[in-house]
Length: 240
View 1 (cartoon, rainbow, N blue to C red):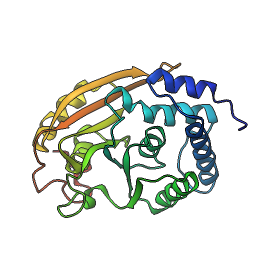
View 2: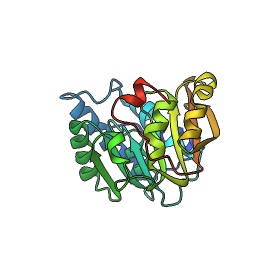
View 3: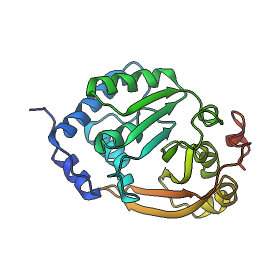
View 4: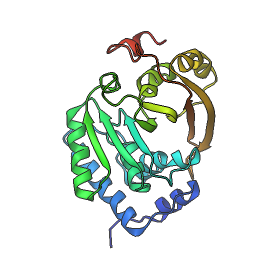
């Protein structure tokens, strides 16, 4: 029996539509412990209390289920995954997913590899590199059903990093913590140029809090033109 009370966590997961097995709950607990352990020697997260990590990282990551059906074995890439949010948390909650975790910092990749090994997860891989390098033709371009990102960047920039990974007919979902009226308007033409189209925004509050969340779902309608993404730094400095 673990020393953590998991009632609130399991209830929160159920509130968003996810029922976890005992072994999945154990995996999340172990993930939390490893996060704390590694966080003491490298900066992975500013949020470290048990309740907050369970809600603001794990439940928040799994909330993707509010915007799409995750029961199928989709191929998913998490761009700028950091400490594995949302990608690794999604893999634990929805084992059918085939997940790629991409991050530019090798230390974070070492942490993710340690968690994957410790939890005995299969169907998940890590890649150390920049988003704009791996979506080039001949690499991972247009290989995924779904691209997700909780990275902090405006939607134009994020779309340029993420949409090139998505197959035509697939989706890119950006996790946001604010209403996107102006940002959506500004990103509209970039999304179109990159081959996407806004499908919907799913707004909700994290269970038991007044913390606002918004899942912005963009559907890939046509291939991304070959010149995108542009070279390192440009998408952020000069959004399309």
